[in-house]
Length: 245
Image (cartoon, rainbow, N blue to C red; front, side, top):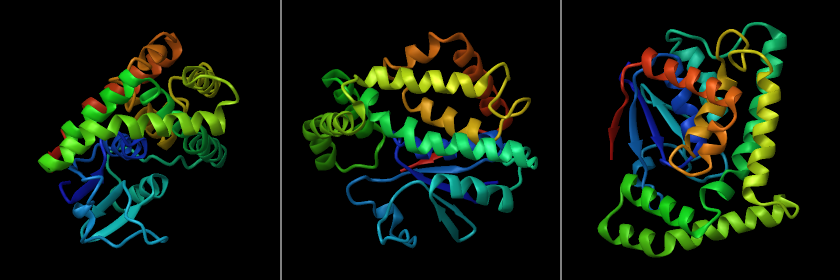
């Protein structure tokens, strides 16, 4: 199904959340990298309810949805694909919603502290942003010079607000431990089959895959096995997505 177009930033965990959902459902889609400065790729789409233009946005046959959790709910309605993301069992659905709320309100909120927490990480993030974004030469130069400073400032602000004296890695480890309790002895957060909580968490952790923090995921056997299990499904169930600027 090539009618699905995802407008995204490469280092946006909410965008990766949607990508994981699309791929677990076996849906082919086109990926459009949005210029974070001009956001001109979103000009033809309506703004969000607060008037701002933000990603992710999924467009399907002229209709668009924003907000990652809303997009995944919408997908099950308009593009059933090979696998529904939302369980029919009420208890399973409640548990999935609880995990999704934790993901959005806790895990994703602290990810910048391990993506941009040190100067080397913030420089790496700035370079990745410049490499993958739809930038002009001048914008690329701006990101290269100022991007790492802005990213490091964001990480410091989050630590002041949420850290309680802890480092970014300590916060990350606390959330990974909580994730392990959600998994318990199951193959997936949805027990025998992945649902939208698996998609969301896997997508968010994929954001740190190119950073040193991901080694802390790999160091936990239960989490590594779950991550690779979902990753294998994402890679084998769906056709490769298309990328455009």
